[in-house]
Length: 191
Ligand code: 5GP
Image (cartoon, rainbow, N blue to C red; front, side, top):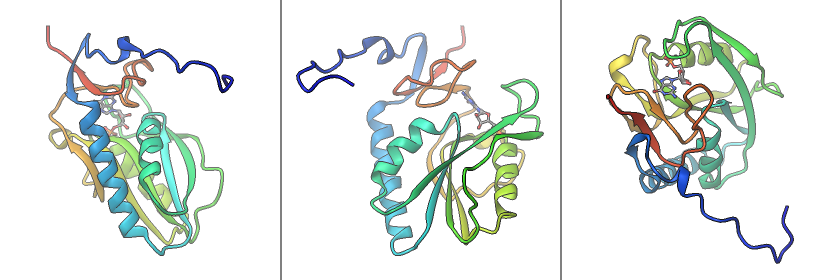
């Protein structure tokens, strides 16, 4: 941590530039939509005790950290690690929990925060798994949805953006673990 007199870190132009990606959703559009989702969650969960916001590692981390700062209610954060077997870009539907929650969720009002619902296999598995732990309620909040790729019916209770069938990157989403720190959402352009 810097001393109080340290200058602010310099701007980082490299991760503000869409290159080598095309920009799909801008920093400003993300911020506006995340604020709306937070306001909606605040209204819907007002007065509910024991709200637990669960981030699905690692893709939801940037979204979750912005979102919870727009939820003007007491809530607890927890994280769960999930991985699909097989090729990272082709969801197999076979899912493994790589890191479990730190606390039980029995009797809690759970909001699962995901980066993207693509085929729907990952989140369908996760919601089924969490439901067996007897939460008071469970809702899904996903930043993105690619309906063209849907293979499993999944109810997204809170959705940021519907996107076309493109492999997207940034704002938490990766390509081979890189580019999660891009502040916008971009896609790889066809050559
Ligand atoms: P599913 O196909 O099971 O709905 O999606 C599984 C996971 O694949 C998502 O949580 C996400 O981590 C990853 N994924 C799906 N589509 C994309 C995409 O367009 N870009 C990136 N970076 N990851 C994706």
